[in-house]
Amino acid sequence: MKGFDLHFDALEECANKARSVANQFRSTADERPADVGSSCFGKLGDASGRLAEAVRKFEGKIEAETRYAQRNLDKVEAALHTVIANVRRADGPDVPVESV
Image (cartoon, rainbow, N blue to C red; front, side, top):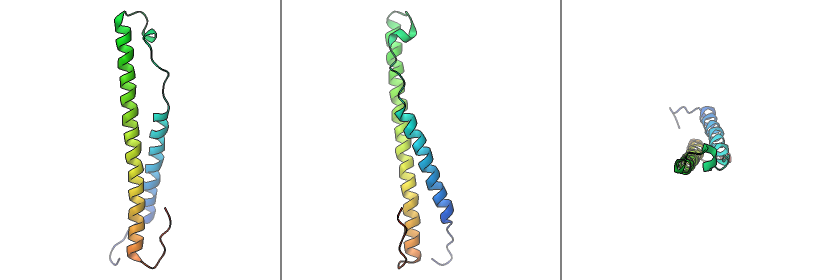
């Protein structure tokens, strides 16, 4: 495409970085801490159980948000590869596009 300058290396680097960070989120989400029971908080009466339940809910929310971030970064990586492929295809429709 005349007059259009695109730095494929920069897009590829961004896609690789998105994949790298997505993998970090994935591994973080896969690392489940040991189950938190009321005994972790000593003898606090009923408060120990409520505190343990609150910690479990909090851990669940962290895992959900981490997985959400990982899925979105996977989408960013895929979108960048799509941009690269589409621009290459538009630039030279007869030239085979590298598989991504």
